[in-house]
Amino acid sequence: MMSSDVRKRKADSEHQAEQGNKRVKGKRQWNMPRRDAAEARGIQPGDVGIWATCSMKKEGKSVAELRDLFQEYAARLYGVSQTTGKADDDDSEGDGADIEAAIKKELDDMRKPAGDPLFTSVKLDTQCLLFFKTKDPIDPVSFVQKICQDAADGVEQRRCRFVKRLTPITGIGKATERGLDEVAKSVLAPHFHGPGNSGKKFAIRTSIRNNKEFTRDNVIKTVAAAVGPGHKVDLSGYDLLILVEIYKNIIGMSVVGPEFEKLKRFNLAELHDAAGEENAPKLG
Image 1 (cartoon, one colour):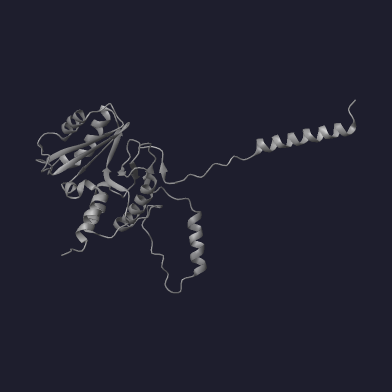
Image 2 (spheres, rainbow, N blue to C red; image 1 turned 135 degrees about the horizontal axis):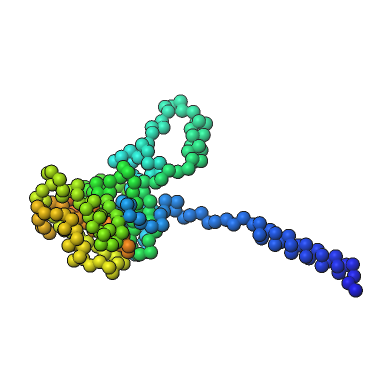
């Protein structure tokens, strides 16, 4: 026969176990915050943006540096901010500014949900490769060209230590024959079709990564067919260069001008190095 003390200890033990199970079942599960709130999970048809290459194992630092650089140029060229996408207001209130009101405004702004960012990095599983989705009013081609032109001219800008080439993309579709044809027709039409667009000399530059369905030759044939008649291929003296980027299951395309070669094919690292050498003091 069980003694009263033994029964009491057993009851206490069962009660504690029951309470522990309740706590475990009712315990709130906390999720780790996302490392980067402005990070998308994939590239989708209809997106536009900017590809970038970088040094090995420097993807994270390159994303941070490029985001700062892009934000700087968005403010400079369009007067818009990274988080809201709206024109920046002049918050200066003169020497008699109300400090408490300014603090309250800042706190209120922090509590407001952030709008869709102008630049959203996409997490990729490929080394040395980055992609940023962009939103209006950013035009990837003119945006990248301005950044690279400033780098060539020695204009002071945020230095991206590990970033190499930038490639603007104005149209993205699925990496299928139909997707390639649709993207080509959409991206090329404003440059090659319609009044005033005849007689263009053009070239096509392709990059295919992690995709075995396409070859360089069949991509060029499809894109050239979308260019249409009345134009001539000229690999060295082109008026327009068609950039085609294929990555896994997506195809991106854009059209740039002859400044592409002058700006070292939009290689930011080479442009900075060249500008530094040009501005270095001459000896002798």
